Image (cartoon, rainbow, N blue to C red; front, side, top):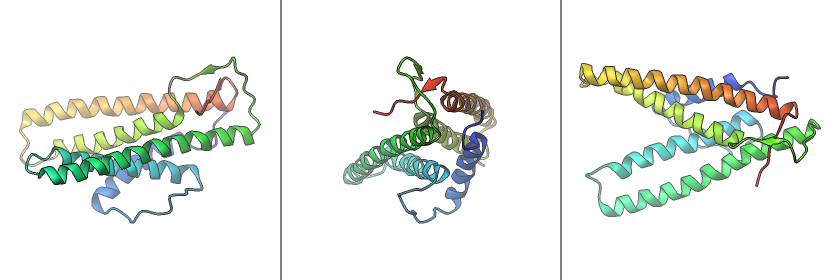
Length: 183
């Protein structure tokens, strides 16, 4: 049984959004996402913003007061990130309940929730974009490009493997082989 959304489309969406957002970051939309892909996009957007705030915090030429402001922004974004991961899991749990998937308390739990896996895939998409950027940097040495090419290959393999794990987990949840617990 296939789950209610296409996992591969979600993975493609994340990669495309990273590329688009580096060209032009759209205005933030409604935070009350009504469908799963929009909720995934909202979570991914937070990771995108978090990534770039962390870049600012690492800038050695930035003032202490600016770093303090950036650290506060990072705290807010991290809380939002965690909240949306939880929303993703609640959304999926509600879908399972609405589809009348039966769980029993003795069913196996996964150590990582689908929302946490989607978060990891979001960060992976950011790493892929930035590693590819390093490979194409004009001032990069051949040695640096070769090293980054190897890392990019590993990142893509990780993305494929984690995507398969997400698909398997969602399939197991939708068929009642595993249960989802949201705290």
